[in-house]
Length: 166
Image 1 (spheres, one colour):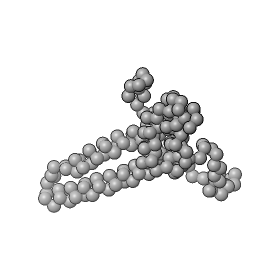
Image 2: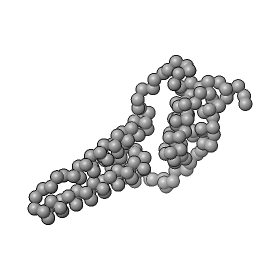
Image 3: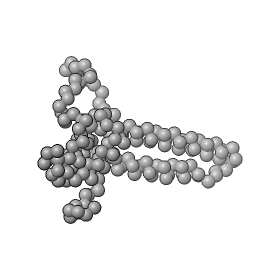
Image 4: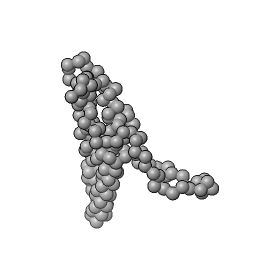
């Protein structure tokens, strides 16, 4: 092993590896659990030797030329293409989109059952679907906001500790 692998890595070096892992996740080269595992190892890495294997199986950024899968659009048709939808999921990963869809279905079923029970008994009963929608929705919202912060490069400030402290 050469001397570089034993040299201590800086915060900027760790962040560079995390950014490269994020790009690989966005390109579909890594699954979310692989990304999270590698990101954790990168943030705990001490030397360049600790960082090297985390990206060893990934191509260098921009080194793989990918052809555009869409056929070229003539100039007059480019102006006529539809604008992107106004409401977006703001780049949430597919697993979170699926979880939001499942949450919506569960809440909808519970609301329908509550309405039917209230209608057949002749009076409004306690709105128990709130106990299904509220906590689950709050947890899902917190996870979505956290993932959005991470993907935008935000998130909590990193504390810089003196060497040797964790």
